[in-house]
Image 1: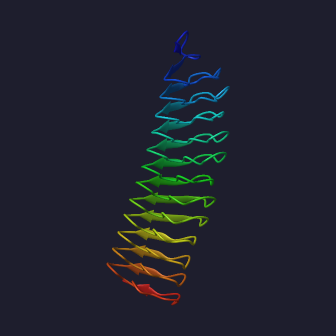
Image 2: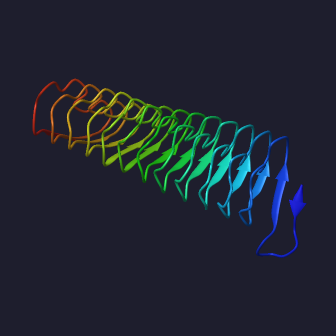
Length: 212
């Protein structure tokens, strides 16, 4: 159904249960039970089975089955892909693009681009992950940046920067920077810098080191 009486109040719902309780303005929902519980939230867009199903907040965009599924009061969230930001409830300013990106997230101000990027992140914030499985195992670590498939994939610490395939892959040390394929891949030390393919690949406990 739709109500397009004016540019400021229009809303469009398409699908069984879509926008069932909505009185909010400027909402668009397409798919079964999309924006199903939304009452007063405004300026939301939901497309896909159960996208933004229990949402009551504003300024969210969910494209994909179960995207932002249990979001209630969080605002300014963007989820594109199956299960993207599916468990996010109250935290704001998250962006997830890719299947299961930030799937169990409860932290704020995280950005995940890539299938399963920041997959296990809960309260860690802010983090940025770009690439398949980038920062996938991170749970509570903060201030991490991972760019590349499997970058910081098994990392559980904070303040790390990884650029390259499997850079800082299984790192348990903090405050490190790795640029290059598998650089600091098995690092357990802190405050290390590695630039180049497999630089300081097997560093265990050593700190601080620089390899170029």
